[in-house]
Figure 1 (cartoon, rainbow, N blue to C red):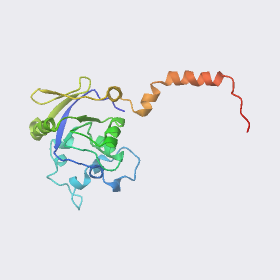
Figure 2 (figure 1 turned 120 degrees about the horizontal axis):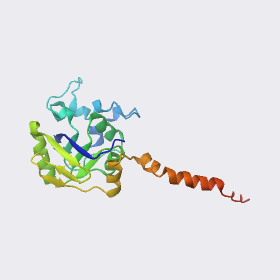
Figure 3 (figure 1 turned 90 degrees about the horizontal axis):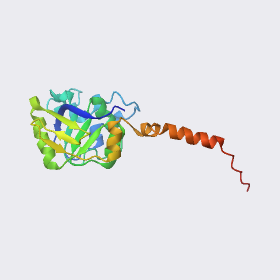
Figure 4 (figure 1 turned 45 degrees about the horizontal axis):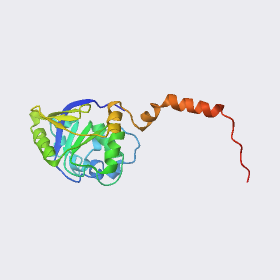
Length: 205
């Protein structure tokens, strides 16, 4: 998993509440277990019309937001079914961070497992950042996970908080398997002790 330390990138404003996982990646695209190739289907119903042509009014179809790495939305982002394809699609498109007042729990957890940083900020701060991002020529934000701040284009810093373990894992690019492998030496030593210990008697019944 790619470490997340500091990200300076284009932020796309998505001032919607209750963006569910079916909007993020519709169910018809869930047949694959590959994590790549899903970015083109991200927000498919919003990005494309019935013929498959791009909808010009959708933010991710506009420059510079086609290259967005940060998404800013309203409450309850990622609600709905618990599909891990949702963060896969966001990451494959290029989104590394999402800022919203709150997130659905399972989606929030899945983001960390896939290297995406979900940041909870008050609605007023989100609206401030949405206004910043709406100025396309000045749509860049900086997120410093080490210091836990979001830097606006004018230099103002907005603090946020991430749980210590989640922060550690993102900073070091550790998913669940990576966390386990970080203790590989201790696991190997424990297995060696078990292999060399006397066998326990088998109880008969």
